[in-house]
Image (cartoon, rainbow, N blue to C red; front, side, top):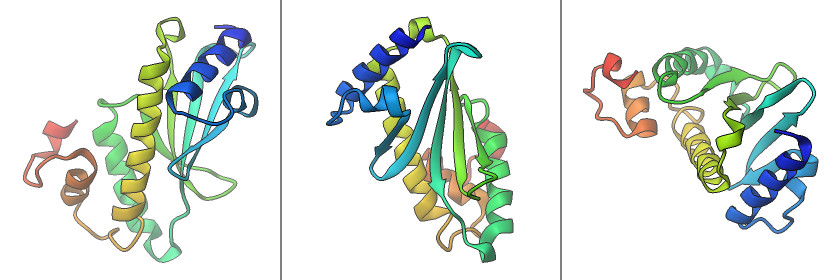
Length: 160
């Protein structure tokens, strides 16, 4: 993919998402879906084969940090085979991020990517509501049910 193709893809994604400014995503590398900030970064020179997407889930309370870290590591383990993304911590802000590398750019479809971005936003909201706000001590099976829609009694190895 080259920069011109990236701008065209961003414009098409923006159209699918009904964003007001169809050129903003391509030039600013930033968008928000349901108040969830996302960075959408392409560098033709260093990584012409992928787009990096960073979904900002926001900060976590210090009092719950250890429990949340524990659950995020479990989510990484279990969701690693279901997504191409991982959970991470932004070292500058301390915010939880969901990091996705979008590959196969020649096959990328704006409608599919727009739906993926909507899904990432919905998952971020779910995590904020279920994991970051007082639910950090909940059993991981309960959190998996809330996030992935799996019954609580589903063995964890079946979720991977």
